[in-house]
Image (cartoon, helix red, strand yellow):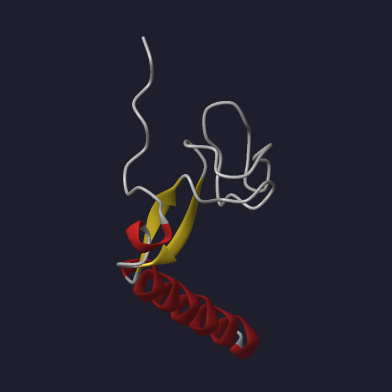
Length: 82
């Protein structure tokens, strides 16, 4: 195997391990994202960074575990109205 390919594979494996570790220390927090600062899509928009206004109930961002409710957010998405 090519040394540079082996090195690249090792770097990607390390990055994936670090991402998994950091995800366990974070949680989704709904209702606190600022306009254009949400972390992912939700009903009514297509991707990260597209929230139209501050504090949309469906928009979420990752925060440090245990911090969401302290900031006035919710750990669960709002229920869809029927």
